[in-house]
Length: 226
Ligand code: SF4
Ligand code: SF4
Image 1: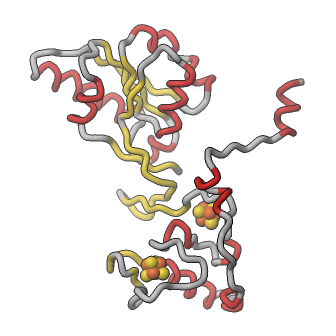
Image 2: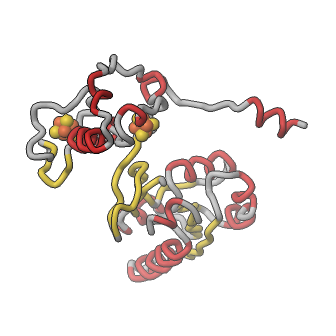
Image 3: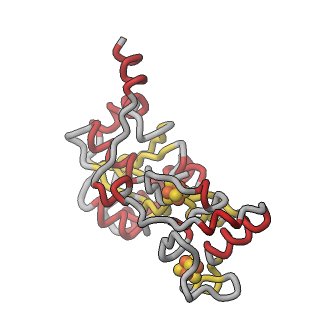
């Protein structure tokens, strides 16, 4: 899932500026699951903004609504009237949801209520950890299902650096060394021979280095055009 966390209330207030009518928009998917921007958080944020601005002596009209997914036009259509009635939209969606609102409602001013952080998973209650950097050319088949791009602090492709110590990364003893994890898993699976294959420099054109990316599925386009 996409993992995000809320900006401090003070930053949200700065982003809202002098707007009188504020619509807080939550999203019912990834940010709901990571407790950053779902319906519950949207309601709490709206309430906090109402109280805080009132205490400042300039109370704002803050309402909230949550859509199933901010990143799909059909769900954004449902809030067209509410968007038009407000001066500003505080999106509690991820960076994609915020941009979708800006693109779908060109006259609406939208600001982020979250900091979108990474693609990860909940490893235990209250902890989310990065697992994928969306490099566009997945090599998990070579590494036992453990990503050295996202989980090695140096994104190394051919084994650990000299800083790996007792299974931990040199950046922080609380961080497991990704290459130790890879070694242990390949060892337990009897697949250590995979490590003998030297990986050439990765082609980063499929990642951010190649500019904004796009996937075109002609089969789906043809279906939708019929
Ligand atoms: S190799 Fe690339 S696509 Fe696969 S998990 Fe790692 S970052 Fe994600
Ligand atoms: S110690 Fe391990 S995880 Fe940390 S940078 Fe070196 S190889 Fe990567």
